[in-house]
Length: 427
Image 1 (cartoon, rainbow, N blue to C red):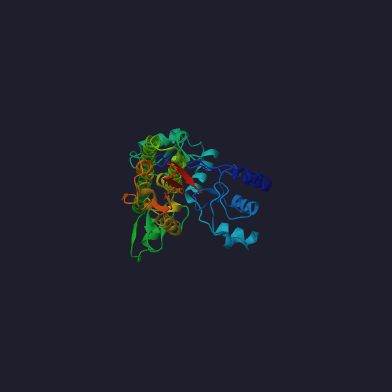
Image 2: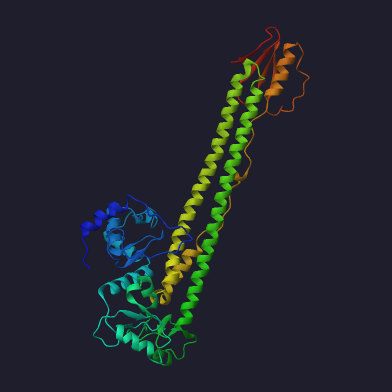
């Protein structure tokens, strides 16, 4: 299918302005057969580390336009930009070609093309096919479908209408073909050669191979592996959701404790003399700053967890597609399977909250009542020097002539004068 170079470049700029919204992780994934850059059916779809997929040609043109190895949709790095700095156009092309091909999307796109152009009956060869046997994969017209249902060897086969057939389902039921005979269905799988083979090849070329199993057995084994990886990602996503929920509750608790602290500060404030109002305001600012810092730490941790969850969602969407549409090209491509397993196993599945968001926020220092005692005794002419204050670690008193200087943690110095019988803020 001919593609417009200018159209692709324009679409690349459009694609970079928006972000793709992923379905929730528990929803079933659906395979889109259209490239978001050229808006046409995929041709050699290449899958990026962020799980976004584009045509190979569109991606090459897109990287040339962007001038940096980033996904046109989410701007995630495809590779280390330093390694791409000295690449020319040909070098970028080779790097894109080396990216893994999305075999699921490729198989579904091919199935969509076949379904759209119409299929001929496998029985009479003359009429258009309206049904398909999901057991053997043959397509039939209405008459031949009835014959297929009534034949003794195929009466138990399941025949469905092509009109209700989705590209994903069609890709799933398409039979695998022998790696040596492209027109012969594969019935076996040789583990030593990692190839789907027909009955003839199993009895001849692969007769001495140590492990030759049925293709269906190998397919089900791979399906179980996919299910296990998908289950692991789902469990990790639930842990992240729980961690986010815990952070939300912690935020509520912090707000409640903060409000309680403000109420206590306000109650104590009404007992203070005019000289300590400045310190009262600074204490409230300190409480606000502590809360802001704590909330900022929580926000950063939540942002990190959200990004991890989005990454897991993207990978699980791909696994869900692969789980539902299992084309033979995926089953038999050991490199693709190994790359998929490696990609999933490299994901971080450990969910822990940093110590800084688990620790309780510090309450503002309660120094008003002690200050009030000092002021009252000073006003009565009582020497406060022998007083043993429980908060001495946070507040110090120094005698300056006939005055006492109080140096609280809030940074304001209050001078208590015997002669003036008043309290004032020291410079």
